[in-house]
Length: 292
Image (cartoon, rainbow, N blue to C red; front, top):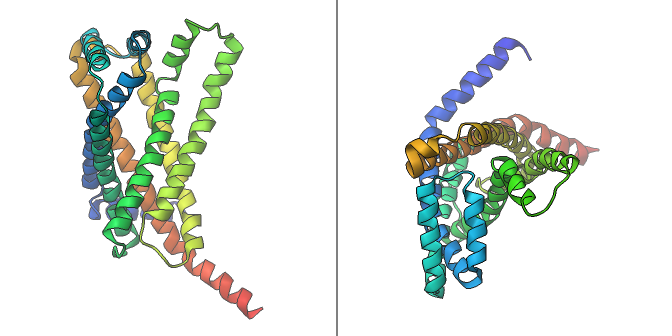
């Protein structure tokens, strides 16, 4: 492939991304992801109220002290202590429902974007779409939470654990190195599922699966790269906590949500382009096999 052809392909993809309003949809996704944090925090804190102890709370505060400002830590400590005194199951249920509702809205936006990329109309029922969105939210949230903690706060977590358990230097180095391929594999798997199941495409599922691999590879590489940059900032330039406090941390989190949302959509567009390219070849191979 010549340089001009590569340049034209990139130019065409950028035009399609803008025409499909992916930057705007990514903003909507980031907003819903951020909105889901508050009810999820209520759910998590409520569960902690049933399972937690004052000692657990102190351990959480010690871990957060590496990345959160003092005022925020005091606020979190007060909230957690209050939850321990007033345990309620209803609060945890409301928090879980609210978190799933907000996050599933972000997934429905993703589904809409995938359908635009593949130029297909949505025909699935409201119930089916919502069940698909909730299942995707649960899988994606678990993977993304683990991946973010491994990459962004991996060093911080390791230092915290080493306060209680002696960790040899060689073991620490291996753990910090292994987190990258493990995280990439997890991200690749979940985004492959997203690109395969979210678009309303029913023709040539094999071509859809093959094309989804490329989108998942794109997302995995660029998410790790962006998270690596964020981890460098957290570890070396975290003075924003002292200057802007909680607001600064929340703004950075919103930027990270937007970046994650945008590369999800771009990965879907890459998959759709490759799908259109390889679909005729898959059909031709099937036809030749039938004729043989």
